[in-house]
Image (cartoon, rainbow, N blue to C red; front, side, top):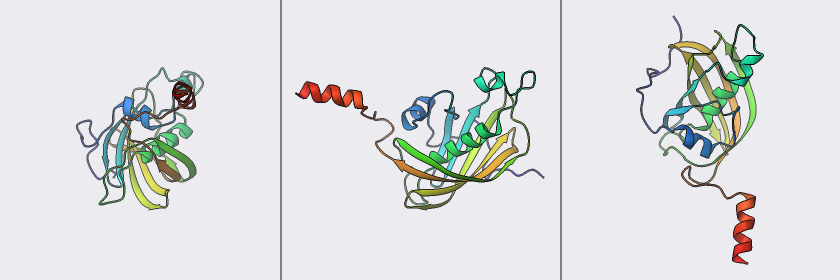
Length: 181
């Protein structure tokens, strides 16, 4: 019997989700390395996110012509990105803010079925431990409620200003400082 997540993976799952604009504000990544399209739910120690796999993604031109398959390294990256959006420890509110993450370790990676254009990769990240910003979590990727990939991750995770706020860049800081004169 295939492994299934703790709650049904449907697009009707709602909670403290994030749209793509919120994801872009929170993450330093940009195309083609933003590998989440939506965060459906963030609860303490858990995140449910979605990656819509489309044939127009640049990696499909070479991986593989005539038989497009999402590269395993990008699946791993998507699983890791979902972990960045988990809520805090049980009993804490889901944190918001700019995400600074250093990917430290991926282990026990498993690829059970290919992920191809047209698939909707639903990712569940679950907290294993959090000690002084060293966060360990497990992520599973499902397509049509079938487990297609999984792994365990360790990241250095820091959060800054709220997602709704914009970070001051060096250029805007210089402009503000010269105007203040």
